[in-house]
Length: 124
Picture 1 (cartoon, rainbow, N blue to C red):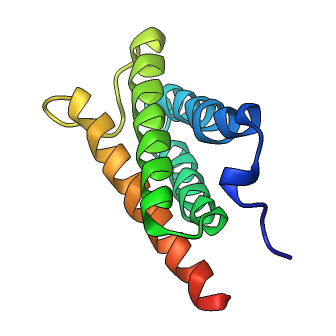
Picture 2 (picture 1 turned 120 degrees about the vertical axis):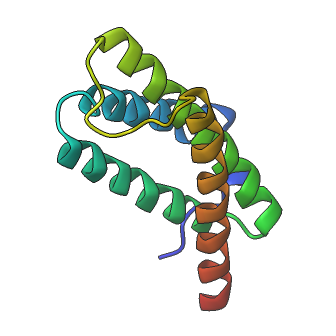
């Protein structure tokens, strides 16, 4: 079964898939980073798998990269905000300049979505 192409989804569905879901998962990761490194990495792995699978909904690398970049940026910002609100000490390093983490997650999101799109294209 082929996924519904992202550009054929309603605007609301696109907002949820590229914004709300990454924000929720990022917020969960942001809370868990101060609780358990194992739980944090498990949620991060789930987010990465989601980023890869998101690429399957795209027919070109450019669209996949844009979606992955935005979703990764939202994930990273939500992670940092939730961690700041939780006020816990991170069990995993967020780097010497934590805002850079959001840029890194955006780039990783774009790369994962491109890989997903390429896998999907090779299967078509």
